[in-house]
Image (cartoon, rainbow, N blue to C red; front, side, top):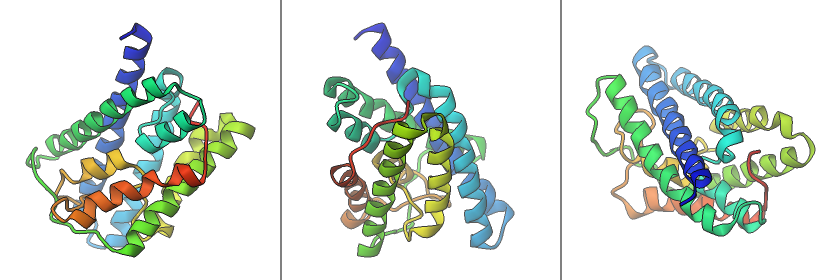
Length: 217
């Protein structure tokens, strides 16, 4: 494994860890501060969007700041990254995401290891994940071709908005879906039902085949 590839993989792992720490940590904080779920979701979505801007600017020059197997898949399909390298990306994305969840638990005094009991499953939710992922790839494709400098803000704005206009609150990322199965907090998703986490993981993977795109710069 080359030094350059190692640097990329570390960037993907760290970025994914910070992203999930932001998603889960802000969810825990919001749930503790607000009795109203709408306010908690607003805080969670804003924190996630802000974290995405910072992470894309920070890790974009290093690894491309995918943090998402679907973005990596779309990039491999379009030839932007060699498929051999793309296959390596998925491992640190998932591992980093899980470590980010555990880090959030540690920061807030929660049990480190847990499984979510919050079931999220229905055809509408799966379709929401397809729409969320299709839109994400479309935003990345359009901005990378016309306004690459605006890409971090555009991606963050889209994810923040998709929290609210999709029934699933826009996971749009199989690594995120898997990692959120390991938290029984505000952001968790129950992994015990085959149609819950597995269905939500598979739905985003269909997005790139309907809307090919380029990755983050």
